[in-house]
Amino acid sequence: MSNHLESSATELTRRRAEGADALREQVKEGYTRVVASFDDTERANEAARRIGYDDEQLAAVPEGTNLGVGCGNPTAIDALHPGETVVDLGSGAGMDSFLAARQVGPTGRVIGVDMTPAMLEKARENARKTGVTNVEFREGHIEDLPLEDESVDVILSNCVINLSPDKESVYREAFRVLRPGGRIMVSDIVLEQELPAAVVASVDAYLGCVGGASLRETYLETIQKAGFAEIRVDRESSFLDAFALDDPMVQGIVEELGLSAEQVKEYAGSVTSLHIFARKA
View 1: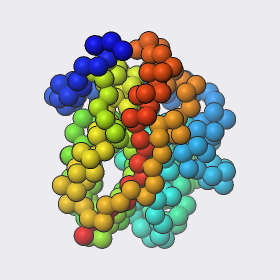
View 2 (view 1 turned 90 degrees about the horizontal axis):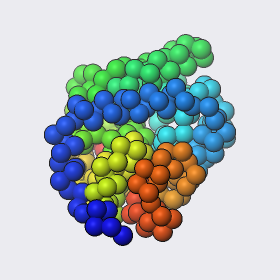
View 3 (view 1 turned 30 degrees about the vertical axis):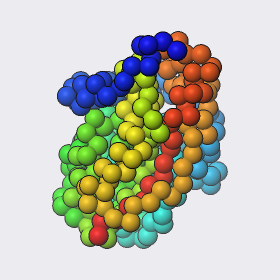
């Protein structure tokens, strides 16, 4: 293994935090390409089944909402109830938002927040085509939510918070907008050990929810420091369980870095998908 791959990623992580605006633009561009190039519903459905969605859920969401880019099913972590207000952080094309809208019913409300105009356009188009009226999609950053204090009951997020260079602000904002007793249900990627700097520096690895991930202990401490209680990991799975090695995004990382099969397995073993529950006391 080269010294380049073995060097510490800590300095690169710090630089990313300092260049947050440039990083957001990279993420927007990357996910705009995801929307524009999506053409394989069956692959996306297969990926969704692998991370916890069932066929009933896949059939229930509008066509084109499942782009195959999540790492879990946050709507399965805990029950949603009729009449609740739910916020979906990084809502993308709206898959989890539409599933939540079914659960909270006509007296409930779902608000998807995303910063990528192409994703918002796709999600709003899906809502119009299906006539779903209890869901809306707002443009905004998850570090500065376009929501009032103590105005929502539940926050969902699926493989998005790891993309933020300021995860502390994300969880502080989540705590701010939740009502007392409100809860978070988050599927996200964490690391069991630091990845090599070359992986962290890779744009493809970042967009693939790996390059920006935090160490497990750090991630869970961030939730606790924001004020949350009853923090638990509902379930977890390895990267290789959640993502197929022939996934185009995974292949992009492998090709960009010139990784061998052994290196892919080694690094993938350091990456875990967590399904996290926590409550605002």
